[in-house]
Image 1: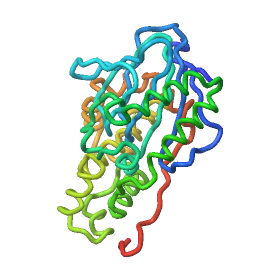
Image 2: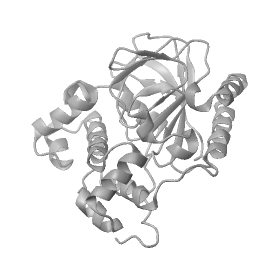
Image 3: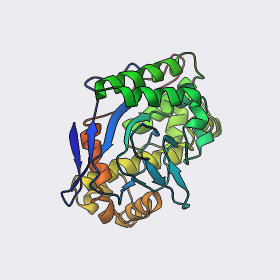
Length: 290
């Protein structure tokens, strides 16, 4: 395991990751264990994925959402969830990042049903979740825990509801461009009207195309800020009109300024848990113009 190190140097969580990708393309896993050195918690930065957390430790994982509501234990956070704080003592958890195109199959709901909120995972997986939590707690290694979780993901994804290939391609194109793509060009590429793309994309991904592109652009900019790139350079290279534009987007997604986001330890976790992680981008299917 490696330690997730806060900017001021205190390691709060240990982080593990699988040695190889799982069987389900578009799903990535990491393991977290609290070291009992901090109860303050961390601000979780919104990410362009649906986040599933299966908690199995001695103490509860606690999430405080922007409305003041508190969630304990296993949970799912919708695409572009609002600024939340994650805390807890002596918890352990497997976290899965799901591409929104996988969500209908794996969770049995549309990302739109989650509406960017944090919800109990029990409501979606029910009794099988309790069994998985028992198995994770009984496992002696993270490799075993990742294999158990991967088996559940693979089983859930078989024969599930699929997303339109046009919508899947549009989502992957947004990721590949770091959010710098026009909705008109996406619609033209798949041979749909702008209205049809907006409707189908919103229903199946959970956000309108333009909002999804804004989230992806923000995510790219936030990680560049955390890497120490100057704000003005990030704004110019990421397609923002100016620094004020970047400031507004960061504030809208996190509730804090770009300078604060640049120091957030949660972004450093990505370098430990998902180093070099990148979505797979595939060309559109047959019959889609590009």
